[in-house]
Structures are given as structure tokens and as C-alpha cells.
Length: 304
Image (cartoon, rainbow, N blue to C red; front, side, top):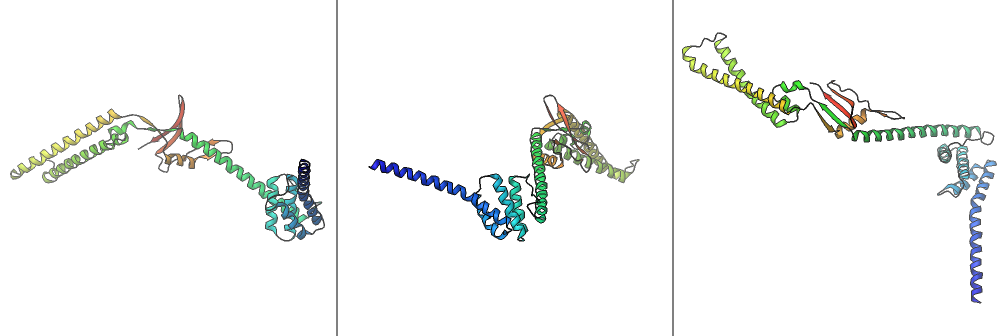
């Protein structure tokens, strides 16, 4: 007898489960129909709790069309009782599920149709703006990736090699040598100018030196000759080394600051990205795209 009782109990359990499932499935549909009836009778305050039960805290309606209808009915009910904020929120929830839905003026009041139309218009505007922002962000990301694979080519003017005080070394990034030549030429040049000015101021252009000052004058002349020669030799050595180490251009990756500036200065369209750097204020720096065999890059030119 026990096996027979077990089978009966199992059958009874399955039957109860099916009945409960059918009841749970039918309950939301019945509640939605009750809400419809209350809405048709303009019992908006009575329809609100029925619709809230179907939508919150989690939706109890499986059919998207029923969800859209419930949100619209709840929004109209809130609007009719004077709660415009909640009405807008429900309209937006309905549009989020189906942005093609409209209100039939034969079923809903003019106030409800107008309010829903305004909400839908704003919803569509916000959606377009969000899409534009998304596209711009996508294009900006593509531009960033392209720039990260690009490089800057710095053009170095040839004439800078003949400028004294280590200009050629500084141009090539040899700062230590640039400081050596700048200091040596600066010190020796200053001594040469000072001694020459002393002699010119003391004895004039003709250089008539009193007998008692001959020794002093010769000493100052020696200092003038040595300092002038040292300054000239330092300039020649600086020019020679600058020409020896000179390279007309250097390629390097974009720095983080340059990358960010190019991104900030670029004009991004919805159909693609176009790099359009703004000209610098002083007009001395220019950046332009360049094509090379096997790749592309940016050319940065600096004019003194």
C-alpha cells in the first residue's frame, strides 16, 4: 500500500503546483483588467494602487505590451490627480520599453495626450544627445588610439648651429655641452668687452699711453687679446661640435601633454574624426600630418 500512497501524494503535489502556477499567472492579468476598469470609470485614485502593485517593486507583467500599458495608465492617473512629476516618470518608463508608443486622443484626455507628447519629445531629444555624446566619445577614443601610434617629427633649423652660446647644442638636447659653451663664451666675451672698453675709455681711439701707465696698459691689452682669442676659439669649437652632432629632424612618440592638447583642440564629427590643431598664440609652433613609407605621423616645426 505504501507505494500506491506515494504515487497519490506525488500526483496531488504536481496538481497543486500547476494550480498555484496558473493562479499566479492569472493574477497579474486580472489585476491589470481591474486597473483598466477603474481607469475607464475615471477612478484614478483607485487605479493607482492596482497599477503600482503590478509594476513595483519589480514588474509582475511578463508581456512588454502590458508593461507599457501599465506605465502609461499609471502616468495618466498621476497626471489626473495632479502629480505631474510621477506622471513624467511613468511616461519615460513606458518610452524606455517602447519609444514608438503614442496616446490615442479618443481614449485619453487632451491634457494627458499633450503631457505625454511633451515627455516623448524631450525623451527623444535626450536620446539623440546621448547618441551624439556616445559617438563623440567613440570617435575621441579612436583618435586617441591613432595618436598613440603616431609620432612627432621635430624639425631643427640648420642656421642655429652658427649661433653662439651653445645654441646648436641646446637644439640637439646636449644641455651640458650647451652650458659649457655658453659659460665659456659668456665669461671670456665679457672680459674681452670690459678690457676693450677700459682701454678705449682710458686712452681714446689713438691709444696714447702715458709713460708711467705703459705697464698697466700692456697688461690690459694682454688680457684683451687672450680673452678675445679664447672667446673666438670657443665659438669656433661650439660651431664645429654643433655641426658634428647635428641631425635635421628627430622622431619621437607624443608626450601625454601633447596628446591631451591635440585631443582638446581636435574637431570631432559624427561620421569620423578629423585632427585640426589650433595655431599657437606666438605663431612659432606648427603641427601637421605627414605620410611616410609604412606609416604616418605628425611633423612639429619650431621657428626661432
